[in-house]
Length: 190
View 1 (cartoon, rainbow, N blue to C red):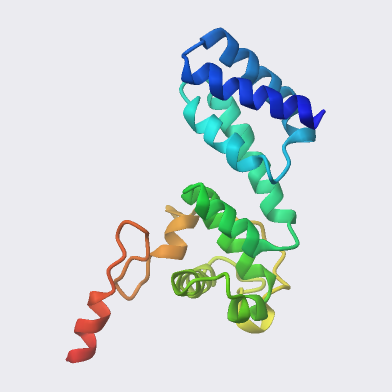
View 2: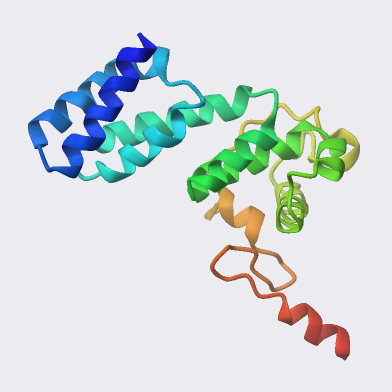
């Protein structure tokens, strides 16, 4: 079944490249029919790229791919690997959920995992501080990381989950396209 899924994905890429709409639609239907049983973590990045390429043709496929990613992120034993995969595909929505699950994993993971960059650690700190306002039962505090059973939400009082990991009350933004920590350097001079 997975081989048939992989083949449909490959056919879909080629058909979409050559603008063979009917064949692309066939591939999309095949993928949708078997996404729950055949979308392996190894295939998800390619599937995501295809769903992005065909988003105008089939928003349903894109939604199904997002849902499948979220399931994988929520159940993976290695949330940092999930974060790295979402960073590779440049999807902030999925990346914010991955940060949430890394935050829930354990403090030791955050402190010692060499795969996390300094920016990742800063985002996790900002996210932890921002999420404390919304997760009252566990507060996602350092001593209780790993005990949180809350599910991430898409919106928190008008802010996206991504915003909670990249925007600080201290006045700087940790988004990839807006990273500027010069405010901190200037404020330390005064």
